Image (cartoon, rainbow, N blue to C red; front, side):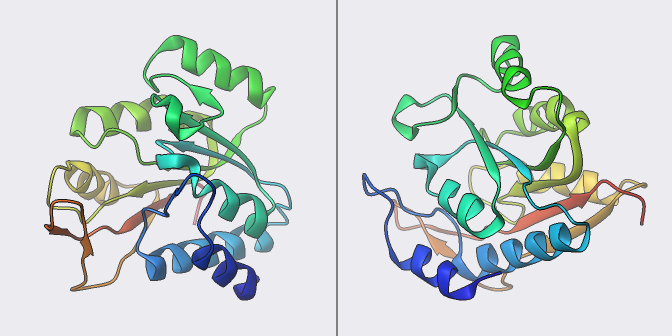
Length: 192
């Protein structure tokens, strides 16, 4: 991965004050792993689907560092998603199928609603369309998130390699001055 490009992206805000909602060291480690994974398999134009785009700040990272085709899904029109809609609705899935044109997703990044039921439903709906990696944001979060519980259950299940990328004993400040741990978890769907 081109670290100079990463550093430029990390220090240059995307238009409309869109800030990267990631711990920068976790995000860098995650992208380095994903880039190496794709390079080792000869995947030169991966398809990345992101559920929950938070101002779409991550799109530039995927496109510029991974040469990816990025499809963002979000219910908030202010986030400028490629697909505006609830990830659980049939119309949203239909639009994704239209954009995929029968291709598989190479990387699915789930970062929408953080309730257990929603994360599980996103996984159940979109993981079957994914050939390589399913990633989850906030696997360590302890405030307003059930991603951690779903991640723990899924990563203990047999059949897939589970990798977590997080900075131990670090936290990120949120708007109400509380601190939460974040973390990114990856499920590798191919046989190991």
